[in-house]
Each structure stands twice: as C-alpha cells, then as structure tokens.
Image 1 (cartoon, one colour):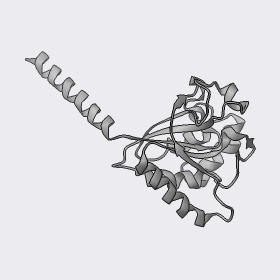
Image 2 (image 1 turned 45 degrees about the vertical axis):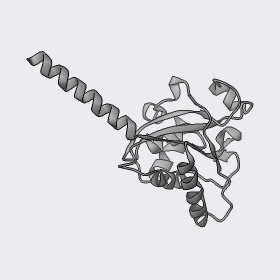
Image 3 (image 1 turned 135 degrees about the vertical axis):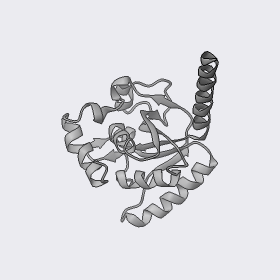
Image 4 (image 1 turned 120 degrees about the vertical axis):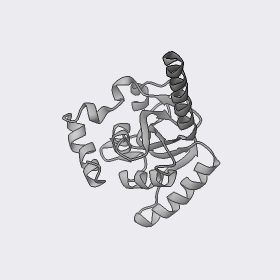
Length: 190
C-alpha cells in the first residue's frame, strides 16, 4: 500500500511539473554582455531560469571566442524562462529597456562590437507584436532613436558552462564590481 501511494504521489508530482513547464515561456534578449543580462533577470520575480548564449548569427555552434571576434554574426543573449502568470512578456521588456542603452549601435559601455547589439529575438507573432509596441512606447524615454533589432529567433546556442551564473559566482571580479553591480543597484535589484 505504501509503495502504491508513493508511486501515485511521484506520478502526480511529475504531472504537476509537466503542467508548469507547459505554461512557461521564453524571451531571448541581447542587451550587451550576457553576464549583465543574466544577473538582471535572475532577480526578477516570475523568472524561472536564465541561460547565457548566442543568437542571430550564421555559424552553427559558435564558441565564445568566435562570437567575440565578431565574425559569426551572433549577439550575446540570454534566454529567459518565465512564468507568464507571475511576470508578463511586457514586464520582461520594461526591465530590458531600463537595463541597457538601446540607442547605441553595437555597444554597451566599454563593450563594443556587433555581438553586444541590442536585440529582441521573438518566439512567435504575439511576442513580435508586443516587442514592437514596447519599443515604440520605450522610445519616449530616450532622446536618441532606439536601434534595437526585433527579429525571429531561428536558433539559440547555449554558452559555455563558465558563463552560467557568472555574476553570482564571481562578484569580486572587476567587471562584476564596476559594470554589473552598479546596474543592479540602479535597477534596485541588489
């Protein structure tokens, strides 16, 4: 009897996890260095996970070194998995606009190159529409034109393991202290 009850409970737990996974959505955003984007969105309620990676280029399975060389066409991005019942795609984009300067072409602070471009890689037509509407609304907050690309996500490549959870694992590293930490403080996330 105990074994049967345990099996039923385990099956119910798996079904619940499956239902949760079905309602989760993804946003794939480029806003400069993916370490910054990851650190910001890890602190947003309703975000389940953030994975650094590469999108928007032509080369299959690019490496960090290749992307940094600027020859693959990829942007450093973060794939944000979120629960839309807790945080909407609109809200994700509000944070996105506040977390970086979308008016600088291929640049965020000292990070320069096409891999640091501002980009929204949408998953479907609904996200495309929301992104376009959001960009138009965000333009009111900036004096210069927003240069953020909005394009379909064709392929996402997960970055190498050492990029994952970078800020949380390397808080004393100079880039984290002088770039990421001030950004988190500005956004009132730390």
